[in-house]
Image 1 (tube, helix red, strand yellow):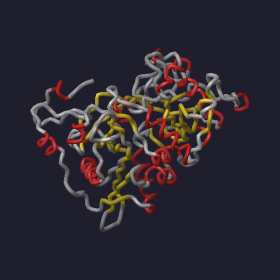
Image 2 (image 1 turned 30 degrees about the horizontal axis):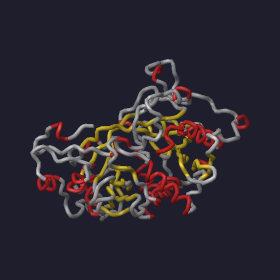
Image 3 (image 1 turned 135 degrees about the vertical axis):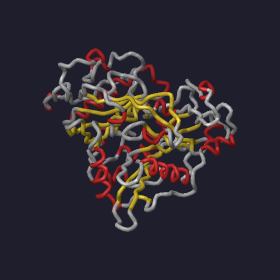
Image 4 (image 1 turned 30 degrees about the vertical axis):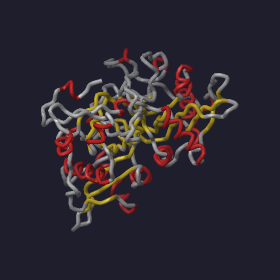
Length: 420
């Protein structure tokens, strides 16, 4: 793992960070072997550059009456369960499973800690299917030991709007990693998605599987550099003192853009239009309607925060930014238990520079006491990262489409999709 000391940055350079998020959603990794994925309708490495392959669906839909009706077989001591996220008890079980067993960094210093409020938000979009929230329990004890979830989404790929499932939160208890549960869980969620007559899916992983449609990098902006250094998330740069580092990352006390305010319910139609117009320029992007915008972008404290710029004279809404909240448990620190992280979500500018809008986003994130602000280099994000003192992470996040081929992999700037 790269460390800032290896880079030997001069005193004005930004120390590099060593984040958990380089392994973000390493959900569908099955180790180095791809024997499972080579049996699936996904882009295969051997097909790269083959001009005879058509873009679009790889396999035609199966007639619904021919689909498998029974769940796939689990090892005899386990059984399937459909998880009702609305049940406080079940939500707590999923939360505990993820909090203790989900993605960690390579050095086992941090582990994602999705809040229960976040899980409810992430798994309950308009039109969600309860049957796509799938758990595995131990027979007898009833203990929840594995989970995978899908949600429906409309995603535009080039000029086609495709009904898809977004697959996420694949988690198997640490003690059961040798049981090969992950492939059967992926097959089971695929079966249930097919039963709703949906044949494509989108997902991300921190590892290279057959075959990414886009590979992106996380960048990190220190908001609380002293804490980040003390817990080992980032390191003091060469020839940098703590006080100089704190000064380097200091932000203004208040936002600078006139008319910058939190998004409200009344703003949904205008924000939807802004967002749809903006996302139209990217090759892969969500096809959001007003219901989607209300669900995904209306502010929810400690889950998602959205701000816009309203012209004080004309009351026209011209610009928009948002970030979601995904804390991590800090493992092994005596002084801190939680790393509070904000993640850049969807941002749209028409009247002010993106640099200025994102600087205001950093300021409100700091006001809300978040420790770090993370952003992928998707959409136009690359234009502000270095200028606003983001440092590059040392891993990548790979985007995949199931049963949908794009002939050429996208550059991050051609991708308009952020998956949680």
